[in-house]
Image 1 (cartoon, rainbow, N blue to C red):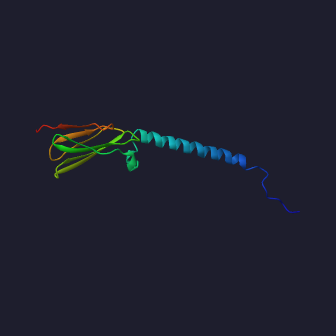
Image 2 (image 1 turned 120 degrees about the horizontal axis):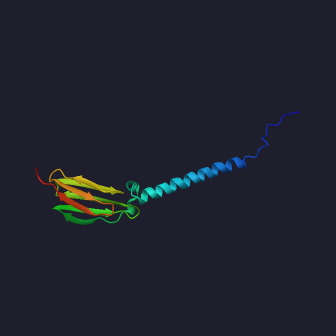
Image 3 (image 1 turned 180 degrees about the horizontal axis):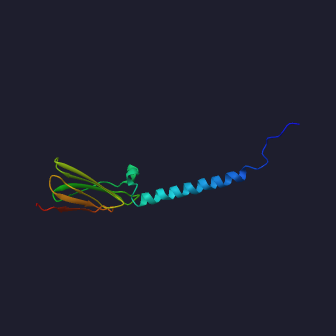
Length: 123
């Protein structure tokens, strides 16, 4: 008489917990991604269409261009002093600052798009 190698245990109940675990992990990863985008931590990965238009201005003799991200807490700024110096600031969820080399000025950009400049005094 031949032996039967068929399992008598049903496989469906064993798959349900795995599928539920995978679903929970996917939901948690998605929620984490949404939170990272909203806080501005992943703004560098956002599509170009999520950024608003560049607004032109000037500060301390420098030409400035600032734009805000509509999906997260982020702003970017391009700062130029003619052709002599170009600076870029990216405030993704936290304030960013940079100091110019040619003219000692500290620029600060906040995630809400506020750009300030402070000229350093000569020693």
